[in-house]
Image (tube, rainbow, N blue to C red; front, top):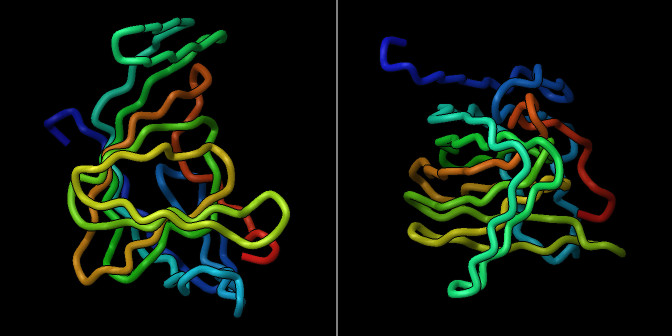
Length: 176
């Protein structure tokens, strides 16, 4: 691309297949985690996700401590900051996955549902709409678009130096 942005399109290639670890890939599984009585809405199937790396920079170690806003962010190891624009297709999910590091996410358009396993059993879900932000965990989770239009999410990852923000597909958590 001449604009300097890297775009990666990911296609779900088959039931039970794990996709190569490319930016924001997902895993298609025979069991998407829709167990009756688990307390969450059904999770739609994994679908293609488009991700564009907007910027990447080495931040090293840092300590942001702003008393006026109550923000404290600290990296005690060499850290890269990666900004990504991700588009989730209608009526689809990213598939269960984790990341090399956490991120902050801003929903640019539409509504997403963040589904995470609980420590002892079952799952929790949080719905986030356009103009709202959420902590996008490094631990196991699934991001769902239940709507009829694509959803755009802007993510700022905090990663170990040289690590990829790519999804790392995992099996559905027990009880989710």
